[in-house]
Image (cartoon, rainbow, N blue to C red; front, side, top):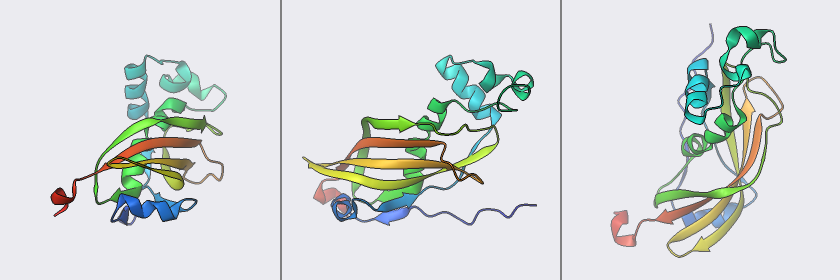
Length: 166
């Protein structure tokens, strides 16, 4: 029987501006996220990517991975969940995805895998009312040294007006 994970607490950052001094450093690690067949099937239905290596366990058992695997884009779509679970910035009221600089999927994600994201701040650019941040998110699979995804995510985060912080 496996031990349950200890409770996970996102790394707390009081102010978005505090991140300026953390460029090049880890700003958080997310809790583990299970990628089960139900999640893979739901993603396949939403995207129309019904390839058998994702949704047909019997056929996939005889395929190159020995089981179904998650879509690369499913793994990528977990970045917001990893970011939310890895760090909390108290004065941020809203964040929007601005894009991706680079994405790679170095290893497959077999069904039943547990994944988590390590966030390293690569860039910080002040904006009116907030900042644009670039995070390198390395997604690891539990029990495997090679990452399953490495992505540079660009988000814009906006702070609450000073009167709203109380």
